[in-house]
Image (cartoon, rainbow, N blue to C red):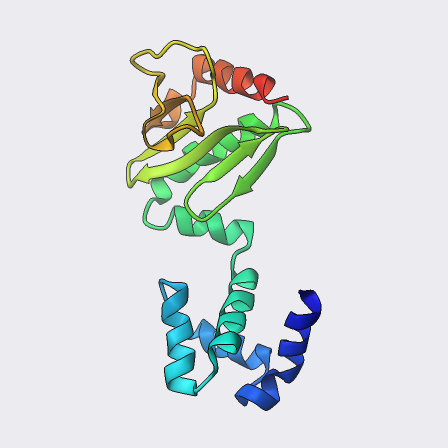
Length: 180
């Protein structure tokens, strides 16, 4: 598959009129919310075939989505939640060398050998921390998983950094230890 993509990149100037670098520069001046919008733009406005348009958009996205960018996008307009997020990440990093922090488009997965927690800015004023704690009773604070569905067994709603206390840290430690 890599050979096919490389061949498309090599043929791009001849077939589309611009190199991949030129297409990426053009796309940086636009702000599409969906992949299909960008593909349609290239097809309609620049007469690029569907295959080339799809490849150009896909390759442009790869560069734009660094881990730092993913976090910045998640917390855009929710910057007040960043201290809570950063505190949780700091705690997870201290759990052990196997802790992996993986930002995605709308959330951050916390993994060891398996996923053990998820950090998600749920609203402008709240982070939802999903935890995988099979067999743990639900309490007023340690709720049912809610929007996390089957990925997590529990959820803790965080609106203030002071809610990151010894009880919450113990739940994170427990989830981490069960993910070996």
